[in-house]
Length: 513
Image (cartoon, rainbow, N blue to C red; front, side):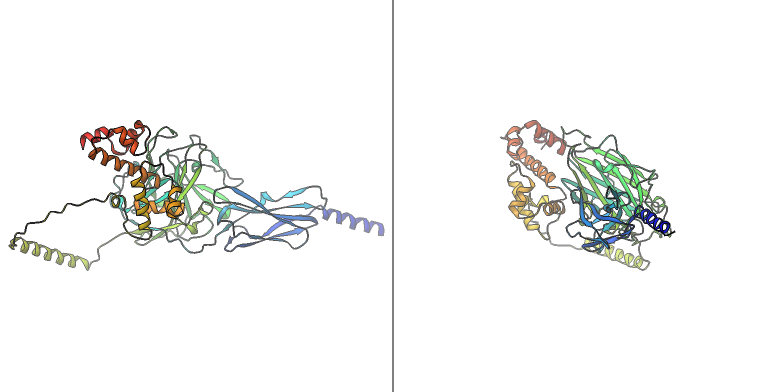
């Protein structure tokens, strides 16, 4: 009997050794890390030799990094990760997982398939990026042409060497967007690869972001959460006119498609995938129905003046199949690794101006006074004074600015003066950062802020403006000589760029002016 008891106890102990389980208990699924230290903890049943913790994240260039936090050989099975050198990560980019070796010592059991998605968000402040979007009584025609949009209301941002301008408006039916991307080389993959976001998904969507295009995100309740759910909408549109709309519900590991009723149109200004020419860019115009925006959303708010919607806009830019992929955002605080974090998005504010009832008599009185003043002035005899005609002298440097004051204005005037004085030089952005002690990213922002153009686009614009002056004022110079003075080694190249910018050949411009 004693032998039987010992046998059963030993057998049960052997079974226990073979039934070890390891579960990652901390951090909790879809938790948000607000500091620089993350504690990983595993719960172990049975006997294991060790547990090794791993973290996997993306750097600012989009490269995936994997790091081991070392092996823990006894309870408590936990490790502390110092993530202060890691940029903020939205859920889906940062994975925490483990491996362990069982009591037999023969193999490891990997826990990557049950990895833990979390987010790092160390900037709890709400973004200051915002746009006041007016009510539109005349609905824009969705045809890819932006002439009917009021360009004075456009907001601009830089995206690598691209410049992006956009505008928005709304009415009771939809919200409208007009987007202009200035890009000298337009590239799109003809065969759009498909992606499955979550394991077990049956819904896939094209990887539009691999080529040139734009992405819009809407936080329809403006809740500024750090994890995406069914109240967040994403629209991706490629330059060649492919749209994908998704709702990414991280809490339930599901992806839904939407935007079937979104009306949109893109228009290419140039050619696609042809690096032998210089493109102007592309435009995107779309109308997003409110009914589509608030589908699957409970407690839909009433549209009214001052209503706020979370919003982000990105530009994807790739210069060729083997070219570098870059990313630019309307909100300057967003980086590649946290662009899917709704708490980082900016805000659209609906505006609908109405005249208050008490303003009507005031306006009527002002009109009566204005009419009286005009009539009185008409019959009043004034002494005739000969006017002194002033001939305005246009400063060519000032004419390049759209903003003529503010921080760094003086430095930018010196930078642009340098470009104006030396159009023949092959100047790159690094030359200017070294000369004027400004960082490359900061200088890109300043070019767009003060001129509405990227560095590359502005330098070409300066060359064309100087060419116009030389063609008009220096009749003794040949077209080839002017091209050489502006840094163009081949006259046909100069002729092509000049005609593309002005609609005339250099000779035609000289003869017409």
